[in-house]
Length: 145
Image (cartoon, rainbow, N blue to C red; front, side, top):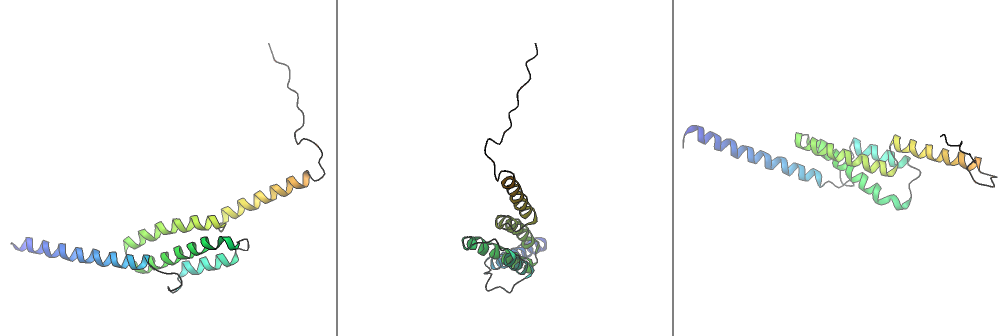
Protein backbone atom coordinates (compact mmCIF):
# COMPACT_ATOMS: atom_id res chain seq x y z
CA UNK A 1 0.00 0.00 0.00
CA UNK A 2 1.41 3.36 -0.96
CA UNK A 3 1.48 6.44 1.22
CA UNK A 4 -1.40 8.01 -0.71
CA UNK A 5 -3.60 4.95 -0.28
CA UNK A 6 -2.78 4.76 3.43
CA UNK A 7 -3.57 8.44 3.89
CA UNK A 8 -6.90 8.04 2.07
CA UNK A 9 -7.77 5.04 4.23
CA UNK A 10 -7.02 7.07 7.39
CA UNK A 11 -9.15 9.96 6.08
CA UNK A 12 -12.04 7.61 5.32
CA UNK A 13 -11.82 6.10 8.80
CA UNK A 14 -11.66 9.55 10.41
CA UNK A 15 -14.63 10.77 8.34
CA UNK A 16 -16.69 7.70 9.22
CA UNK A 17 -15.96 8.19 12.93
CA UNK A 18 -16.83 11.90 12.64
CA UNK A 19 -20.15 11.13 10.92
CA UNK A 20 -20.93 8.53 13.59
CA UNK A 21 -20.32 11.11 16.35
CA UNK A 22 -22.53 13.65 14.56
CA UNK A 23 -25.29 11.07 14.15
CA UNK A 24 -25.07 10.18 17.83
CA UNK A 25 -25.33 13.84 18.86
CA UNK A 26 -28.35 14.29 16.60
CA UNK A 27 -30.06 11.21 18.01
CA UNK A 28 -29.45 12.44 21.56
CA UNK A 29 -30.91 15.83 20.65
CA UNK A 30 -33.94 14.30 18.94
CA UNK A 31 -34.67 12.10 21.97
CA UNK A 32 -34.84 15.15 24.27
CA UNK A 33 -37.71 15.15 26.75
CA UNK A 34 -39.02 18.71 27.32
CA UNK A 35 -39.43 18.12 31.07
CA UNK A 36 -35.82 16.93 31.48
CA UNK A 37 -34.12 19.46 29.19
CA UNK A 38 -33.10 22.81 30.58
CA UNK A 39 -35.50 25.29 28.97
CA UNK A 40 -33.92 27.06 26.04
CA UNK A 41 -35.18 30.20 24.33
CA UNK A 42 -37.69 28.37 22.10
CA UNK A 43 -39.24 26.30 24.91
CA UNK A 44 -39.43 29.39 27.12
CA UNK A 45 -41.16 31.35 24.34
CA UNK A 46 -43.63 28.52 23.68
CA UNK A 47 -44.45 28.20 27.40
CA UNK A 48 -45.04 31.96 27.61
CA UNK A 49 -47.23 31.90 24.51
CA UNK A 50 -49.30 28.94 25.68
CA UNK A 51 -49.81 30.58 29.07
CA UNK A 52 -51.23 33.66 27.30
CA UNK A 53 -53.67 31.61 25.18
CA UNK A 54 -56.79 31.96 27.29
CA UNK A 55 -58.96 30.24 24.70
CA UNK A 56 -57.33 26.81 25.10
CA UNK A 57 -59.48 24.03 26.51
CA UNK A 58 -58.55 20.80 28.28
CA UNK A 59 -59.02 18.98 24.99
CA UNK A 60 -56.10 20.98 23.52
CA UNK A 61 -53.62 19.50 26.00
CA UNK A 62 -52.24 16.91 23.56
CA UNK A 63 -51.37 19.60 21.03
CA UNK A 64 -49.81 21.73 23.77
CA UNK A 65 -47.60 18.80 24.82
CA UNK A 66 -46.62 18.17 21.20
CA UNK A 67 -45.76 21.85 20.75
CA UNK A 68 -43.59 21.83 23.89
CA UNK A 69 -41.77 18.70 22.66
CA UNK A 70 -41.08 20.33 19.31
CA UNK A 71 -39.71 23.46 21.03
CA UNK A 72 -37.46 21.37 23.29
CA UNK A 73 -36.23 19.44 20.28
CA UNK A 74 -35.37 22.69 18.48
CA UNK A 75 -33.44 23.95 21.52
CA UNK A 76 -31.52 20.67 21.76
CA UNK A 77 -30.71 20.64 18.05
CA UNK A 78 -29.49 24.23 18.09
CA UNK A 79 -27.31 23.41 21.11
CA UNK A 80 -25.53 20.74 19.04
CA UNK A 81 -24.59 23.45 16.54
CA UNK A 82 -23.57 21.32 13.57
CA UNK A 83 -24.87 22.05 10.07
CA UNK A 84 -26.88 18.82 10.08
CA UNK A 85 -28.45 19.75 13.41
CA UNK A 86 -29.31 23.23 12.12
CA UNK A 87 -31.03 21.63 9.12
CA UNK A 88 -33.03 19.37 11.43
CA UNK A 89 -33.89 22.39 13.59
CA UNK A 90 -35.16 24.29 10.55
CA UNK A 91 -37.51 21.42 9.67
CA UNK A 92 -38.65 21.19 13.28
CA UNK A 93 -39.34 24.94 13.31
CA UNK A 94 -41.77 24.62 10.40
CA UNK A 95 -43.56 21.82 12.27
CA UNK A 96 -43.66 23.99 15.39
CA UNK A 97 -45.18 26.83 13.37
CA UNK A 98 -47.96 24.52 12.13
CA UNK A 99 -48.65 23.38 15.70
CA UNK A 100 -48.85 26.98 16.91
CA UNK A 101 -51.21 27.81 14.04
CA UNK A 102 -53.42 24.89 15.05
CA UNK A 103 -53.51 26.30 18.60
CA UNK A 104 -54.40 29.76 17.27
CA UNK A 105 -51.11 31.13 18.53
CA UNK A 106 -49.85 33.03 15.50
CA UNK A 107 -50.78 36.63 14.63
CA UNK A 108 -52.32 35.68 11.28
CA UNK A 109 -54.59 33.02 12.77
CA UNK A 110 -55.62 35.29 15.65
CA UNK A 111 -56.48 38.07 13.19
CA UNK A 112 -58.56 35.65 11.11
CA UNK A 113 -60.46 34.51 14.21
CA UNK A 114 -61.03 38.09 15.33
CA UNK A 115 -62.29 39.19 11.91
CA UNK A 116 -64.59 36.18 11.71
CA UNK A 117 -66.05 36.88 15.16
CA UNK A 118 -66.59 40.56 14.31
CA UNK A 119 -68.37 39.59 11.08
CA UNK A 120 -70.62 37.24 13.04
CA UNK A 121 -71.35 39.97 15.59
CA UNK A 122 -72.27 42.40 12.79
CA UNK A 123 -74.58 39.85 11.16
CA UNK A 124 -76.20 39.09 14.51
CA UNK A 125 -76.74 42.82 15.16
CA UNK A 126 -78.30 43.36 11.71
CA UNK A 127 -80.59 40.38 11.98
CA UNK A 128 -81.60 40.76 15.62
CA UNK A 129 -85.26 41.55 14.91
CA UNK A 130 -85.41 40.26 11.37
CA UNK A 131 -88.56 38.57 10.02
CA UNK A 132 -87.96 37.51 6.44
CA UNK A 133 -85.52 36.47 3.76
CA UNK A 134 -82.08 38.13 3.88
CA UNK A 135 -82.22 38.71 0.12
CA UNK A 136 -83.97 41.67 -1.47
CA UNK A 137 -85.90 40.91 -4.61
CA UNK A 138 -84.20 42.16 -7.72
CA UNK A 139 -85.94 41.92 -11.07
CA UNK A 140 -83.90 41.36 -14.17
CA UNK A 141 -84.23 43.76 -17.07
CA UNK A 142 -85.90 42.35 -20.19
CA UNK A 143 -83.65 40.52 -22.64
CA UNK A 144 -82.38 42.40 -25.62
CA UNK A 145 -83.13 41.18 -29.08
